[in-house]
Image (tube, rainbow, N blue to C red; front, side, top):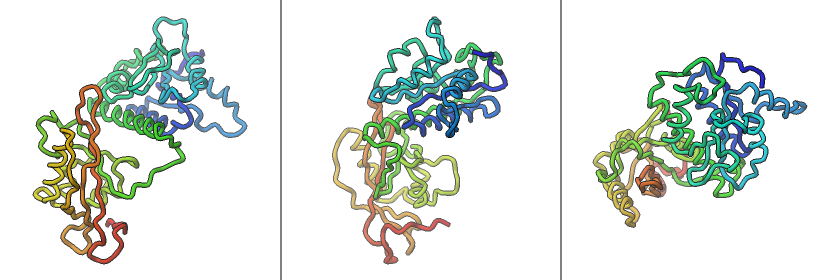
Length: 335
């Protein structure tokens, strides 16, 4: 391989074509860690008709310090991705540190890569084994890098946030793969949903309801901007909590919140409950412009290793026709 330029830390992201969305996400997150120093090339990007793609990929591999392989599911054929890895590493080396394989935490990495850095697609593992070493121990991720740490004083919250977004993107791809849906398929959900991250909320045995500091997870398959607009939470703020949404609709002492907290507590002990009859008013509570929904706990995600609740989803079920007489599915008009 020709001598690498040292003005940029170049990362080559290898992936299956169905996983391009995840590959772009990983590239964006790594680039954001050090925009002036990290440059990512996603395998197959910007290859137009007439381009010698084999030669171009070999060129990009030759100019890269690190290759990240996104190994989402063994059910796919991985011959080409493993070929890219084979071009990049020296398999006769005793310690290959220039390849990181991100894989399903419930599965195994590909057998031919048992000597490279394999990282389970979990937030804590991605943070500890991939994101932080790239920032603070860059020379350990690639023995060809000679300029020291990229971001020696990177903050823990920056590392954890990047790792969390990558883990969530990987989980999304795995869920789509398990459902048999390709990237050209999208889901239409007739109900609003609020997805909450419970991981920063302390010990679950102390919860008597939904923790108010649970973070709202935003995204197309999580809490959409349309749903947030019901709470007038659409001003570009970077992060919302469940307590923020409750306060936006003056719900701290509302009967619907009492019911929801009670049902959530029951869900933690795997009890069933009847649907709530209490109504939540959103958009413009106590006015002719209000929207009414029946909030209900839809699911609670638990961590496999210790059964700790880490995520919950609330559905907002439409309650008939609003007082102004328009259809209940009419889109609010945020100002």
